[in-house]
Each structure stands twice: as structure tokens, then as C-alpha cells.
Image (cartoon, rainbow, N blue to C red; front, top):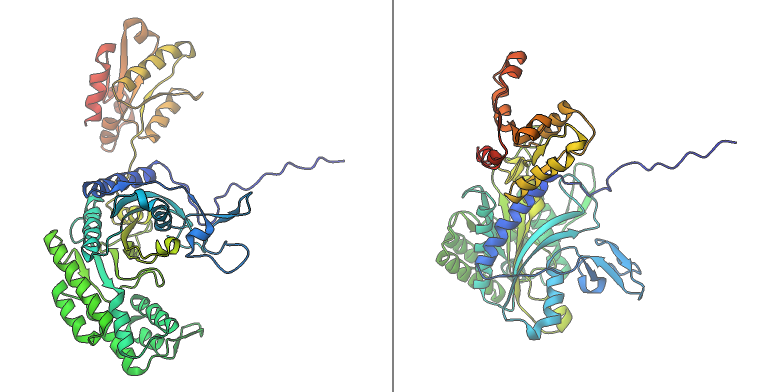
Length: 489
């Protein structure tokens, strides 16, 4: 009889989820701190809602079935109510605003950041868990509220480390295309949605591909056929003329759009909204090259009701192999005047913008502009003799009391391995405290930063060891100032 071998699971990450070490976490935290500072400077209040919401409160991804797990991760609670992990930070805001509307200052201006989860097929750069950072104004229908959100997004991009010209925020208004379609006789919701989906593929398929999708349909390279929106040729050309009206200053784009949409009531309302946004942006000091009107921008096909905006990085971005990679959108938002009404039955205007923090951090790294690429380790106190552990911990405590990150090596390896450990941690220095130093009241400090900078030019290892560059033995009372000088470079 043989024993059944113990089950050993494969050590693997779930598909679409990722482990992040200190470098990535530091980059994300730096971005969150910088963007949050922009939001707070504009008077926005921080808000944190729970990771779970009742599934019926989310609405966006839920199917008509017994288990609401398409698009979201859902569980059945012990009270027979479905709860789901939030898929964004806006749906929880709508629930919070509806729940507390009577006691909130109006308009309610809040910002939030945190992880969100989507039960979708993962792919390159597309994860099921990622970090967002939002700012929203609930309770103002003024186009100037949209303009303020746009101006904050522009300031947030610059605060994140993107110089002027490295990113652009593109703006459109859903009322414009709706007005154009109504003027051409397209009124059915399904046909409008098909038009929006076709326009959303302009970057990938170009005008000719979109023209086919606006008409009868398009067959791709594999032979698969996508049914089109069924527009007549004249209506399809009007839509293509509209989406090609961007470029130049905001006022020039407005003039071109006005010549295309044909004077419909909804289209005129959209033009008025954009004109007021333009005036407010000018007053806020946001130039045409920082925020531009772009009629081809389509977001949230069944979500946004007016102005929509999308942030795009313009820098050359390279992957780990040095090949060009396109990140496209790194954030977006718009006006969503119907979301709170799902709870209250009363219209409540709202507008907001969301940074995809994880994607923005990855884009900055790919552009060679990571907010924090290398994370420094602590000063490491080398262990020579276990009998002296109290003295080692005392030294570490003195360093921490002075605001210097420090640790005592708690492995079992010898001196050489401990030095290698400190180097892998990118520690600025090590503290060596043997029996002689303890008796004499001194410490030996090795400046690892200096050692790393000098090592590249050294050919003779024996000379290197004899010189001991960056190493000094000094009285214990001089330890803190010496280490502080190392940290200052």
C-alpha cells in the first residue's frame, strides 16, 4: 500500500490579476497623491465607498438572469441578496448621493480612488482589477461644471509628470451626433447605438471601414461579418463629415461642426454647451492644445448624456522589448445626468472624470517617465554575532527615530550574503557593528550608493577591496549625520 501524495497546488496568479511590487506600488501611490492634491485644491471632498455594492444598485453590466455575474464578480449574501464588487467608482457615488441627498451640500463635489473589478476577458494591458481615481460634481447642470472637471483633468495629467504636449484631453458632446441623426431621420435607439459603435471604431478601421459599418455592414479579414447601422449613403457621409470636423482651435472646430449638424434643436443645445465649456476653459487658462474638441470621441454608449471627454498620452511608448506600444486612453469621463435618477426617480445632473491610475503608471513607465522607477531599501544593520542582537536593534531604533528607514538582517547568512542582500534592496548604506566597534563605541558605515557609482570604472578587484571606497569608522554619535549625508547624495 502506498501513501497518496500530498496535493500541491500550482503557484499561479488568477488570469487578469497581477502582483505588484514596491516599484509599481510607489508609482501608483505617487500618482494618487499628486492627482488628489489637484482635486483638493479645487475644493473636492474625499469619499471612500465599500468594495461591494448590492448588484441591483450597479445596473450597468447586469444581465437578465438568475445570477448577475456577467461583467461583475457577484456573490449571494445570506439574506438572499446579490452583492457585487464595484466595477467603477461612479455607480457607488450615485448610490451614495441618492442615499444621503438631503444632508449633502449641493452641488456635491467629491473625489475618490481605489481598486475596481470587472469580470471580463483579460488581455495585454487589460486587467480584471485595477486602480481608478475620480472627481465628480453631482447636482450642477452647468456646462461650466464640465469645464472645471476638464481643467482638473488637464492639471492632473501635468501633476502626474506629463509635460505640456505629452498628453491631450479630447472633448465631444453626445447631443451633437444625436441631433445630426435626428435631422437625417434616424430616431430608433438601436440604430443610434449602432452608429455610435461604428464611430467608436474610427481609429482602428479608418473612414472606409466606418462607412461600411454605418451602411449595410463589414466583413473583416477572417470573413466574419458585422451587421451595420443601415444608414442611407447621404446620412453615412454626414456622420463621417461630422467626425472629421476636429482639428485646430476649439472655436474653429465649433464653426465646422455647426456647418454639419444642420440646426437640429438637440444639436444646437450641444453646440451651446461646448461654447460655454470653451469660454470657461479659456477663463481657467486651459489652452487649445491642452483640451480640444474632437467629434470622433465616443464613450459609454449607454451611459453618458452630454459632454464626454477622453485623455490620451501622446508620447512614444515602448514595451520591455523596446517595441512601440499604443496605450490610447488613460482616462475619461463626461456628463451622466440619469445615473442618480435610477434610485430617486428625479433627474439629478452629474459630471466627472476618471484616471485609470494603473494604466497611466504603465504608460509613464513605457514613456520613460515613471513617477518612481526604483524604490530605495532601508539602511541594513549587518549581524556578526547573535549575542549582540540587542545592540543591533538599538542602532536600528536610533536610525528610525531620526526618520531613516532601517532594518536588522534577520536571515542566517554570512557577511558576503548580507552585503548582497542590502545591494539587492538598493539600500543606501550598511552599518557594521562587531565586537571591537561595540567595545570602542564606534560604528563602521559603508556607503553603498558611492560604491555602486564607482564600481563601473574599477578593473582590479584587489585594489577595490583594499581601498574600501565609501567606508568609514566613526564614533557612534556621528552615525546619524553621516547616514543623512549619504541619503542626500
